[in-house]
Length: 375
Picture 1 (spheres, rainbow, N blue to C red):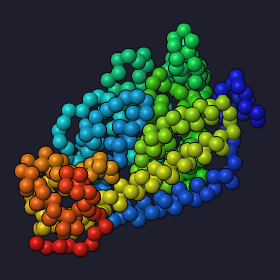
Picture 2 (picture 1 turned 30 degrees about the vertical axis):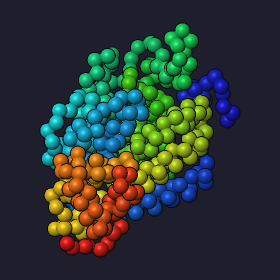
Picture 3 (picture 1 turned 90 degrees about the vertical axis):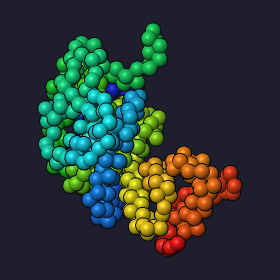
Picture 4 (picture 1 turned 60 degrees about the vertical axis):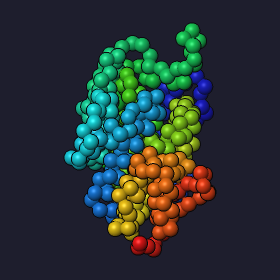
């Protein structure tokens, strides 16, 4: 039906029936399942410790970036410490704020219980987690109340730009009952992307909570993807959405004006496929890291090992611009002459790849090297 410039999607007569062209999503749906199979194969090459590390890394990144999308900057190390504790793993005992603990609990709960039916109580509990430590909210752990319209606005107070207006509070019981009835229908793998994209859009359109809808909505998308596959997805969805934040909000905004959602699902599907690629790269990085240290075990001195461990702790991105002699000195506390000698040895044995010369020299881990040189 034609898009009304004055109506929101929930005001249109066909709401909440969201239509889309299945044929346009077939290739994406097939790619999603194919990539999920590759994930399973790659994951099988990790040992238990590496799998725990991957879960903690991916979920802490998801918690950090899902919050960052909403303009809230949390401490990544504290998030990882909190998530490790929730999984029963050893942590560094650092202090974790209520906000960091809350978003960690939400994502771990979705990871562990992705296959349970969704109900009002679960959503209330999740909102209590997301809103932990918030004293500025009128309603926590329940749907919003009151007669004031829920709007997403920008611009000056005297002349705001309304980007979206959600259904009034007195419609939420009906809207959320219908949403839960739809979400709890059996998931089918062949339509997993579409179902997850619709779940996210429909929840965001209802906007049932006073705050925290974005983080819960993205968690619901992850839950729906996991249900389609029959196992936790562990994909970096918020990593990709945060990188494409402007396009993400624009796509949601356009979709909030119509109930023909093929363009929205196309955007969402591309984001999920990119997130799968990112997660697979992290799995391959962990496998490469494990093989790297196996390859050079017994050949590294304590300084070299300390510097390499610190490099790998930076993850896929590594040190910006590579490891310099100055970085090496700061990490190990050695003299410049020792740093030069240690780095030259690492390059000679094939552990590091050298780029540039003299003070411009930078070093990068060589995860492809197969020869194990011995001193």
